[in-house]
Structure formats: structure tokens, C-alpha cells
Image 1 (cartoon, rainbow, N blue to C red):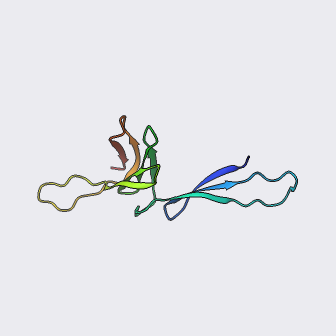
Image 2: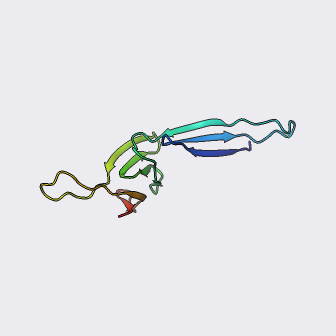
Image 3: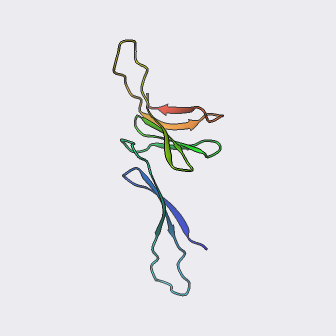
Length: 119
């Protein structure tokens, strides 16, 4: 064993895990190469992800970008829900203002998520 693991967030909204082995004591000065262990694409976020939160049993994850909220199944990495964070519309109005999401947290019971916004 030995070595370290690095999590990288890319500009394409993907998360990658890389493994960097420990340098060999028998061959000092020989460069080591990182190996990509796994990757998770955050499909559909129109802007950069601002927050990732896990449910209390680590079965679900919530990611938020500027105005999009996504709930993910952690085990199979599938998107369970994709929501627009928007203000309620008044009756008869078709357009609504979207909220600028900054953070999120699952509430006890894991059936609701609270969002922190700039508004």
C-alpha cells in the first residue's frame, strides 16, 4: 500500500479520483504517474457546482449550481431529481425569478433539502 488519493473537480463539472503511488525507495528520483481510479459526471448542470451535500445515511447526494438543484443516488450515480430553484409565480404569471443557490443540506429524515441562496 501507501500513496495518496486525489479528488479533482474539472471545468466540465466532473469529479475524478486519482491514485498516486508512493515513490519507490529502491529507485529514488524516478517519477511516479497518477492513475484515474473513478469518475463521476454531473450531467446537466448549466454552471459550476457550488455545493455538494450527503444525506445522513450517505445514500443520496444533493448538488447545486446557480439555479439548478439535483438529487443523486450515490450507489449507482444516477440523477433522481432535477429541479429549478425558482420563486413561486403569482396567479396568471408565466415567468418566475430563479434563486442563486449557494449551499444545501439534507434535513433530518432525508426527505427535504434546505437551500441557502444569495437572495
